[in-house]
Image (tube, rainbow, N blue to C red; front, top):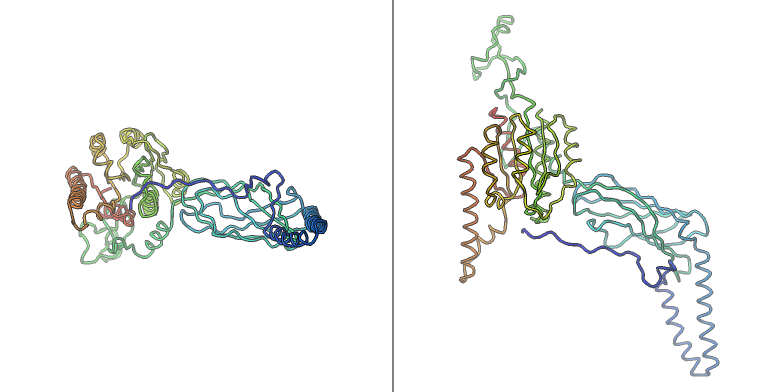
Length: 460
């Protein structure tokens, strides 16, 4: 269901107001000992006030001496160092395993403790942070986290509390430990699609066979079969071998696929656990990988109210990483998308014919008046495909049972919005511009299917 992106409150690990200056915190064991002395002191006061005072000072004095001794034997905060072992690049929403190593440079070694990593607010931490068990002068702790937003994040600090054998007090310290993590779009779909293409590609339940296709680029010569076009016979090869031979052509390689990615206000809403922009990037990268594997060039342009990133067309699978590096931290903002600026820039820098795929929102297509004239102008040179994610809320509203006037109004409005979307797609199709309004889990498949269909018909 579509909803606004969540706002998060920052974490505050180990930020004790009372003991922050001393960098020490009491434990539950110390509190238990203090409370245990209360009935003893009360009983002693009941027998004799002098005896009560003696018990009070003896009990609390003993705890004070033991506390001072424990704190004196613990190494100072400056003697601790930390190392973090974590990947540099992770996929959005995928679990990340992190290992922390804490070392003590001098002083008596601690016995136990706890480490909390200074994760960004967009990383989901573990339910319980791992305990530290020191063996010699080192301790390790491992935990699992999960990023919930794309982008570049720097982990600066490890928060550590440690204590001795008595367990009355614990020192705490913030240890600098810098590590950069890049959270990329979920690339599992890209890898799965490329793996399936090594055998045969199955998209939308249909198998796309890697069959011989017409084209203009010469590929090879093979024996003639009854289904072959006689115009493809290679007479020179036939004369040499005394057997009919035909030329095999393939679609031209090096064509250009241009990805236009809208990152404006409408793309920041959540859809089934991910923002529309996240799902768009995953689909765009899948299409880019397929096109590059087929020998074509891929360009990418991201925009909202202004231009955010542009990647010129290039070929080769290594170009996928170039596109990822340019777009992985793309964020939606509160500005309205400026289609005119983006399409004008593209018309200026992209002169060659290309297959342009615009990933945006259907509401933007419906209500953006300046979009159609720019598209019709680009249609003279380029092939255009407009992609949008279906809103599941409309399907839910269109199927509700009518029990009153309010339900009837909601249902009729949902049907009207659905009809507006279908009417817009039909109108643009009549102008030679294909519009696809698909569910979120079929966005990549729709883009790849359209591209493969154009390749098979040599329409690029």
